Amino acid sequence: MQLRPTQSSIYSLVRRGLMSNTAKLVRAQEQTATGRRILRPSDDPTGTSIAMSLRRQIGNLESFVAATSSARPQVDQAASRLEEGSGLITEARELILQGMNGSLADGDREQIATQLELLNEQLLDVANSQSGDRYLFSGTDTSTRPFEVTDVAGQRRVVYRGNKDGQRILIGREATLQISANGEDLFARDDYSATVYGDLTGIKAGTGGDSGYGYQMLDVRQDGSSGAMSAGISLANLGSDTLIGGRALVVDATARTVQLGEGTPMAIPNPAPANLRVVDEHGAEVRLDMSGWTGAGMTTTLTGAASLSFDGTNYTPVTLAETSLQLANSATGSVIHVDTTKLVRAGREQATFAGTPNLFDTLQGIVDDLRNGDGVDRNVMVDRIGVRLREFDRSQSDLLQGLGKLGATSKRIQTSEERLLNLRVDVQGLVSNVEDADFSLTALDLARAEQTLQLAQATGSRVIQQSLLNFLR
Image (cartoon, rainbow, N blue to C red; front, side, top):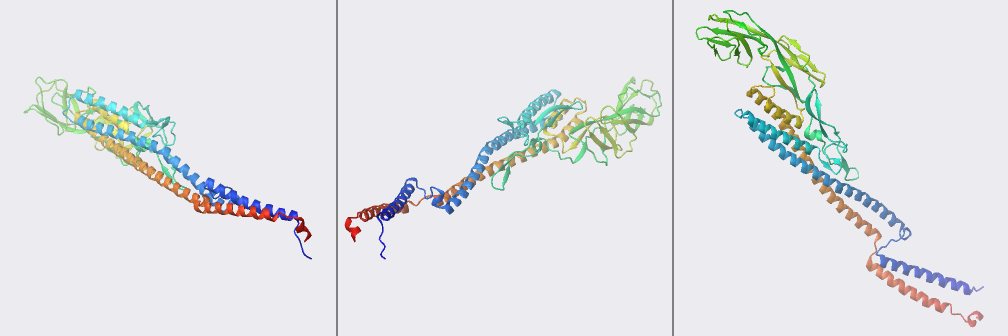
């Protein structure tokens, strides 16, 4: 039996053909107008999946770029402030070396001390620098002021209030970069190596393990002088003797001199005084009452007893035979062990926990030394400043090292930002390869779709033109 298409089926076929060709034309027009090959997921499901993955990568790259862009000003500002601090330290060091000149007058040292105080305040301002409302050198605790001036056991101290953690940013999928330097590492690094004493009293570090921070004072007290006296000479016992241990006392009647230990022989005034100060080779002194001197010679041994205090209150008598005598300061929590076998004179001895003093306490200590509140002789003062200068140089090295790290960090941020921007361009290119249309092909597709639609319209119009004769056949 011969099958004959119905009028409705012909119309349906023509309609479907026209709609299909119209859809192709519309798609070609959309691609031409937008320049994109994929306008909806159904256009290319596989390509859409690839494009979405690439766009996620672009989003991640954008966040990395934003992190580096926001971090760079902070790093550059911190480096700029440290450069300023480095200049202040260089200026301070020149003043310190001037102050160590033994020929300077007290007024000159006071002027240097005043200048160093001002520089110390400026350095403290640098250490407490802010970027907006965030402190640059307080670690991750950016809302806390890094350094504060406080009082510890009656002494002015600068303490660090921040933390040692570093601020970090993501510069890659699994790569982070630290963008901050904490103030403790820059200005107050604690790297204890030994306990160092000056040359005032002869006290030395013992064999025990010490614990403490910064600079503290050890009081060496003379508890009285004794010795077998003759020729009408006696000890004045005025409470000002500093002799510790045994030393020979020789009165030369012929030369009319008196000598303590290996010190310079001193002429005996005429008339002989009731308070004659005699000094040995270590600077230790005794006071003699020579008012009853008979003019005869005398040789004897004088001995000075001593006791030590690390807190300024509690004193421990010593035998001058201890090699590791333990002393504690409850106010600071410090413990030291001292060797008393070389103790020769009384006085306030500076104990330096080497590797622990911060820059600000060191500068303040040098200011105090220049003003010589303890009344020590110039050699002792210069010796104290020399000890502090070593700590000052260590602090300067820490700051310069931190400055170098920030400079390297700034450079790495710049390099990372450039790399991320280039990578973003590359990934955007991959997205373009997947989503964007090839204009030459799109133009051909558009022309082909237009021609095909026109042909389909022409053919359809002829097919659906039926007459009665078509139905009678």
